[in-house]
Image (cartoon, rainbow, N blue to C red; front, top):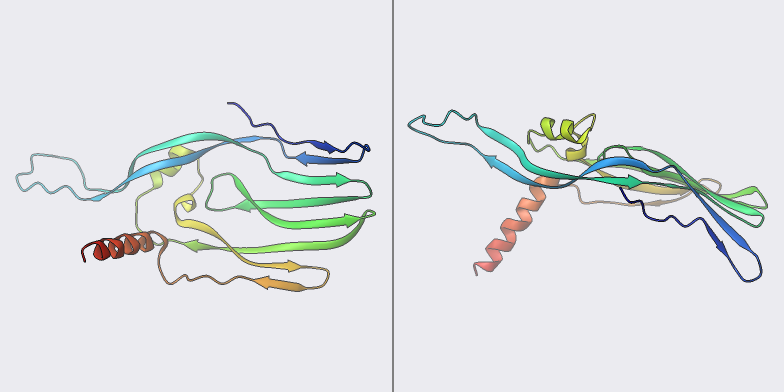
Length: 185
């Protein structure tokens, strides 16, 4: 596997330096595509003895190397990035906070609050989750949703709203159906 080069330092002509520190690279498989086989075999003569298939088949995966920025250091200060485990992407993380220090005193802290869009589609994805090395099916059903960002020292909060009236997978079908109907006119 070829890893991308990661920026580690910026230095100007006067010798001022900014250093970047990242986590070790972890290798994980990511799903790159699947065909959806939501059909049932019908055979009135019972010639085929295949069971009904309801799920994702014919998938491909790719191994990726991931690294997360942990901190940036500069003259008399630094920025720290804290990460926590996330659902929805196997062995991946989400940014949980950013801390900014000036003269090594904390001057700002931004905390991120998340939840998930959760699909209730009934695709059978157990085999593919196992094939990817995932511990559960959340890679197919959960999509990260940022709820708010809070500046912890002042308690100033920025909140985000989402239209979550539709199931994630069903929404794509509604959009496709709607665009097909528009083309028929």
